[in-house]
Amino acid sequence: MTIPSLIVLHSSDSPNGRADTVDDIRRWHTNPKIIGSGTQAQCPKCLASVDENAWRCNTCGQHFGRGWKKAGYHHVIEIDGAAMPLVELNDDEILEPWEIANGAYGYNRRSVHICMIGRDAFSYAQWLSLTDLSFQYQDQFPRAQIVGHRDLNPNKICPGFDVATWLAQGREVLEGHVL
Image (cartoon, rainbow, N blue to C red; front, top):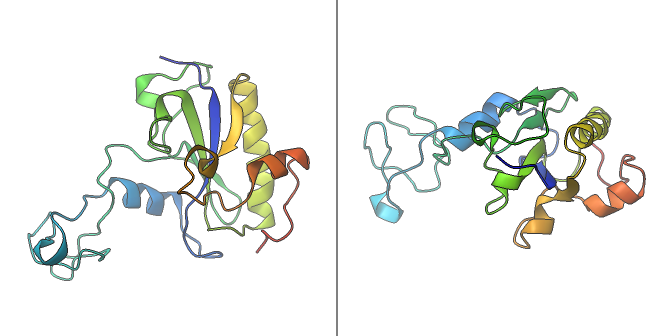
């Protein structure tokens, strides 16, 4: 049990404007991953040979994912602005083991995660929802600092905008990042 020190913002890295859902994210994170690699890659369901970059088996229709036990975000903000829960949080300040999401390797035990659908441009409804949800998270986790995933890992671009700038500008919609 820990008290989160970070609220980590993410983007789904899906094409801007595509109406992916919380169920898509859950599937991408928790569906089984391909077994092996290169010419040895196989579907985990039917063991058919597959391209290692495939997202679906042509033989049995199995969708592939990362094979995680749990998804990576506590909330996903869909393109219409709906903030959909993914990994459940209770209403206290303490992060229980069952509340931990897989959003940022090495930081998950002390962080909560919000993801916006898209890569680096989001709908006005998503921006408004992010503002509301970030304030809700700060009320629940008052000691937590808001950061972007890329602030924790220089190899990441998500959430596709500079979180420090967004915070400094009063959590207003960032020009150049709107659908």
